[in-house]
Image (cartoon, helix red, strand yellow):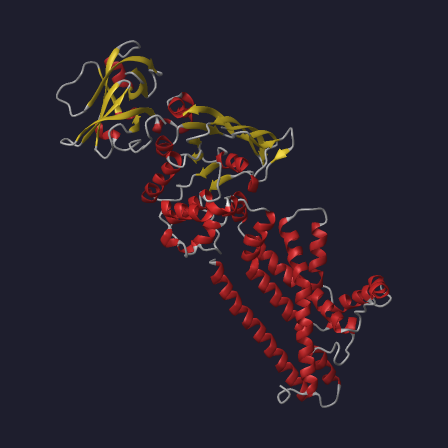
Length: 231
Length: 367
């Protein structure tokens, strides 16, 4: 890899993958829970929750980054408490970048999972109940497996969105080489310097390849999954 | 014994049901589509909740609004076989069948699994996916799956409706096996008269969300409420008979009933077997004197005990031939013969008219 990629490119690539992976890991359980709430439950505040979840789709990313800074910054409401209680800082770290891209990708993930939850035949769940399965067993043995293609799609969308995240990330965790400088940020940085056209093109192609590989892999996986599910 | 006394409001639909079903045999829940049959079975299974009332199965209370008891569906031990099978698409037939096995004692599971798979003839299907099964195969697997969950009662919601005639004939013997050999009480939801005549011993009529009649099948099915539920086309008389003799030379079977004997075509029965015969009112003719030189084989003498509105387009005549037999003739014929109550007449029934229905009940004597 060191022959193919410059140290800067390798660093940005690894960092991008790490951020995207953690973005999916932290948002997946919350995303499944939120999708389930939105798809299956009727409660006061349903509309508000759905508005908040889908807001990052339409709000400028820089606004999301700024709000994160206000909330999670060292002197922010939650950030100060985190720092004083656990000594944790997320601002200007790669973990912060993962949080920022998780929030930006969250609506895509929730939408995909919710659609596939809506498509699950509730009558199958009823049938499972009459066969002696409690709510948890029905969820784990019927609902979750039948929703799996949607969960996979949601995870891939969030992963891909994270690879491309720029605005919220640069606002919240800045552009620190080796810590928060992911591929898009690296591309932006080289463009700021004279003679950056060639390295910028290389980074652009790298980003493109990564996205295509991710989408193709998920498509293959989804196909196998559908076959497994017999649907 | 299943005792039900509930009221429920489901959207705009109001359901009020009060009936009891015996602890053995098939109880048919009969009504038009939209009458509330499926809503009622969902309530029995615990999938829908009544607003008031009580449901008890034997000494187990499943629902009691006053005492705030509502046993969840997974604790009711009521097997439910749905019209569309509802097999789990992501599981093999084997995994579908085994889904409810957890309710059986661990040492019973393997033997019971083999027994049920064998009974339903689904061994070759075990590793297949539901998507690749035919309609009849799906229903057999669904029956096996419910059976393997160790139910105290089986709800079958029009399990044959989605099947063609050949597939229905394939499933019915299994249901009879459950009734006669496994001795599992069954609630059979249907709007098919032939099905319930063949299977049921007890009948609950439901119309527009209300139970209009409930009782032994023969009693209810020959009563006015059933006639109101089916419409005139299906009008007739159902009588219980026993196979008295087989006339192989003439390919006829003699059936004995309290009014005498009926001869019907075919000999594919066993002596002593009990059969229900459905005699359509329009298939019964009336003669003042026993006719001669006629192909009709069954001629039953009896007294007229009832005549419907003589000014209608056609006239229903009830003749007591040992059982009350309903005949439907034209107004013209009724006037021509000057029929009146108390008169003795002869009811004529073609043997071939009895070929179609009710001929296939294999119930053992005494049930």
